[in-house]
Figure 1 (cartoon, rainbow, N blue to C red):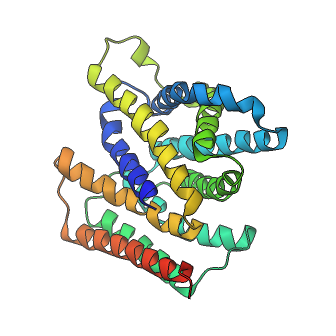
Figure 2: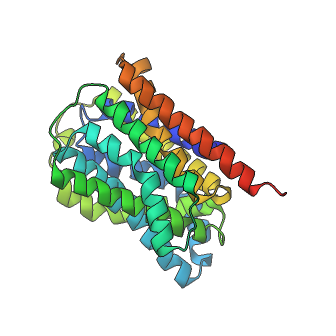
Length: 290
């Protein structure tokens, strides 16, 4: 569980790093470059182990790379172009509910009553977190739909990824999907990139430093930590932990960017953290031997 919390803490910092990266890079190019950086770091492990993996498992890894990056990550960034950041954070907060619905419908997962209650409270906390501040931009149905599809893709990748990691180590799994993800993202980047100006303008050290941080910390390190934690953490508990990401993101914005938290948003933060802690306690009691 602690590996996942650390990963989410690092992922949350990507919102702040992205602010600096976007001063020079198109958002879609930012995703592509961060994956290329992470893929280069993971390449030695990929080269060493890829040929040893059987074809059936290899196909699953290609599918998971597609779900994690071109679909989940790219759709999220493209969706942000059409809708407000506030609505995007709210949809991220709904992912625990997505996990419970998809788990029940497709993977035979049994949910306790408190899973639904705490998942709903966490989602409501995210809504308060968003509406407590100023709404930035217009809520778009199309943009929201892309973000929902991105969230669903990520949830499916969690279930299937956990199954694959029963067969290979989390480090190897992470290397596989990062390298494959960087490759399968290339066609999407060519289609969705709107500005190639970064190749025509003077070097922006701060923006390049931000992209480097996104590649090394937010992609390579954070995905390894998350996948390592996912191996030993129940999927429902993993989903509850995910809602901490926007909370961490807000805290980073306050500490680094100087943003202020309104009282309604503060209540939302307390609700999200409380729901997550409650879920951890209840699931821990369920797993303890009687």
